[in-house]
Image 1 (spheres, rainbow, N blue to C red):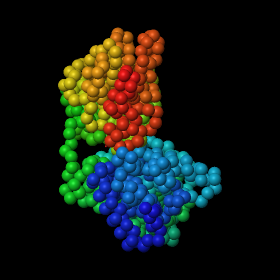
Image 2 (image 1 turned 135 degrees about the vertical axis):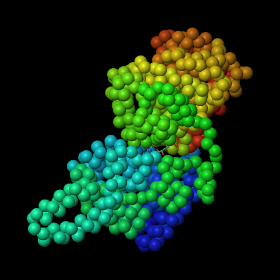
Image 3 (image 1 turned 90 degrees about the vertical axis):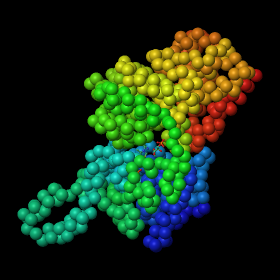
Image 4 (image 1 turned 45 degrees about the horizontal axis):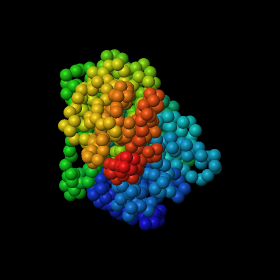
Length: 605
Ligand SMILES: Cc1ncc(C[n+]2csc(CCOP(=O)(O)OP(=O)(O)O)c2C)c(N)n1
Ligand SMILES: CC(=O)[C@@H](O)[C@H](O)COP(=O)(O)O
Ligand SMILES: [Mg+2]
């Protein structure tokens, strides 16, 4: 399907288009799952962008880009939208590799204004007639990167239009002073009209009236002062569902040829009554019944719930336990702890760097901090882990959720780098549970461990290994476990890799002398156990990137110790891993059970 040209449509036609887009989004997301309420709330703003700006030349930059489904539908992906977030289908985010109308990839939040500043510099250097337009949510405004970008933009005064899509929500409740400030701006509209009338009066008034009026303005003008002080023009708040108003204001913003913030108020979930105005649940959904809003599948036990429950148990017993999440209270299971102990567990908003650093002094002061962040978002806090936690060896506990392949979110969200990026840091201890029971033991071990920073990782959803196949033993620092011994082939697995290795073992056990080791710790790892293995063919199975991963680590060790072993890795190859269900993606990467079995048979046949 061709790109839909909205420029010649009248308001009624645009409103009908908005309705059609919402119906398409609801229909597909209810059957396939995906992000829902953000994207429903941004339909008119996106139509407005397409109406006023020229998508053929102006960079359209979507923050996170989970709200950009309307943009996908307008730019020739109406039919393909059916494959949303499915293996081999279109991405849930903007991807230049998917469409020339997707200017930049996103998935992590708060990068958009930096991208706009960069492209605005390029446009100026090339002396072109283009203007970057950004769509960013209020939740994304909690991250430091936004202010780094605004700081430069306000100084350079490059033409950039930033549409602030303010639905007064992040995934959950919005956090912090900026969010409160944006809410206050609600009152601004009335004041703006007043200000206009007041200005006319002032021009004729004596100077003492001018003085009083100025004071009045200082006292009551909450309208965009913050942004104006940063050197940006501020327009708003406008009604982000009123196409006429959006178009009128965006036209003005475009003509100003300056950095402008257009502050639009929207309703998250707009157009689907069940979702309108609800925190969290409707942000990202699995397939559901449109009529009732009920999910089609009942939720089952997952690693996040097990982590959350165990930490809550410990927190009830020990007041020194504190914790933080960065805008993912439900996603990380910290919500329950925040509810019961609001003075000890915090959501800091999208602010992973701050989350990490702020826990180090709590450790220094004798508290027991847990940082619960997804593997992919912890990348944001990397320097803070090195500089503020590891350097002075503070016992901050990192609970790394969504480790491994996460599924439908794809490239931007895969939790595959943490083993590599953490393994190289001095002072840190790294380990991983293999099933729900060992996850409980992992939380206990991390709680008691006070020698320095420690991190454990667990997957999205359930482990691939069921409980009670192997008894969950207490963790001992740096100790692995031989689960099944052998003299020939050894599957050396880590974390959620143990379940996959066990499946491989079951297929091959009658044909080969094959065993299974759970490494348990990657740092420090169990050198004695490995040296004493009789099996000299090691197959490494773990859900992390191969580069900087476990096989690499074991090869270095084996070479140093002259162990004379052959090591093969079934970790993830050196590429960004696409979206789709875990099984299909692993098959594509040739690290699924069948591919591993085939390779072992070929090697040993
Ligand atoms: C660095 C980072 N941390 C956390 C997230 C998870 N996340 C995705 S969207 C979102 C909420 C964003 O809120 P807002 O910008 O207001 O957009 P809305 O969904 O309300 O439209 C969060 C926390 C992320 N994508 N990137
Ligand atoms: C857009 C974003 O970053 C989040 O909404 C993410 O998709 C959540 O992932 P989970 O579904 O794994 O919590
Ligand atoms: Mg929001």
